[in-house]
Amino acid sequence: MANTAIDELCPLVFHPKHIPTKIDNRTKTQKALSVWFILITVGFERLAFYSLAGNLVLFLTSDSIRWTSFNSITASLIFYGTSYISAVVFSWISDAKLGRAKTIIIGFCLYLVGYLFIPLFSKVEIFEKLCGTLPAYMEESTSYSKETCSGLITAALVISAIGVGAVQANMAIFGAEQIQEEKFTTRYFYKYYIAVNTGCFLAFGIIAYVQQNKSYFIGYVISTILLAVTFVIFVAGYRCYIHIKPYDSVITNFFPILINAFQTKWKHQRCAREKLNKRRALKQSIYSSDDENENHDDSVSDTDEQQISFFDYAKADHDGRYSDRIVDDVKSLRPIIAMFLLLIPYWLIYVQ
Image (tube, rainbow, N blue to C red):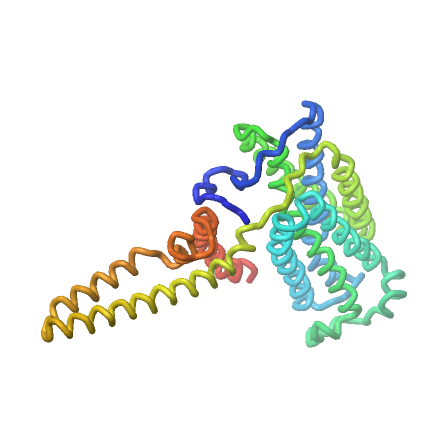
């Protein structure tokens, strides 16, 4: 179980206190190489991602596919939405089960499997062999499921998006874990976002130009090759990386603590009611008309209950089953959950 304190929100990288610090026996060269392997991987991966996502709607509405604009946008939203959901799932898997490096490798494998189909779809001759003859013209009333090869295209996009989520959920933190000195962590994140923006710039500035002015096939072949090279680069640095063992994440503990808090609070309230009833019965037998004391007892009982927050009922100090640090860690999720809830209307407006 994770015994982590609520003050963990201060560092840039989360290091659970119950896990001993990983002894770093790497040479200076290996330490430097591990970071550069990751930064290069990030740059090329973002290049491949935006080479697909940036022109996806235009590609699906082009003469290569001939989908309607409405269904093309739907496919794009499916791709983005799947990647976001996948990021949440694989962040938990990496924390609690597999570790970051293995999760990233699995993500790249899925990424490549789905991505390999995109150049095939962009070549008309291959597309017609896979999916049949292209429609002579686009009908705006065509439903998504009736679009040419909608099942195969959607499957390829979803598989790639799952891989995207697995990679992106772990890459930034995995790179930061390679730096044992906290004072250099911020500098790493500067370089990380430079790599991200460089990949985005090359995707929109070069690959998108090739796709729209030369050939979608050539553009996607280039980005597919770069994605494969990216995977090779990341795996090549595997021995240079420092690997933190997986541990129980906050998400793993959230629901058990929530249930235990409900159970303990109900027990507390039941015991409080029983004690209050006993006091009332005792006082009624001694003082037949002592209403003032009854009201005083009620207020004291209510005050005692109000002093304990809901999640604190899961703490061992209040007859719960969890240590203070685990519960405080879960409590720290509350502002994060509020932030994510606010992102929902933001993205609903943004994608319109």
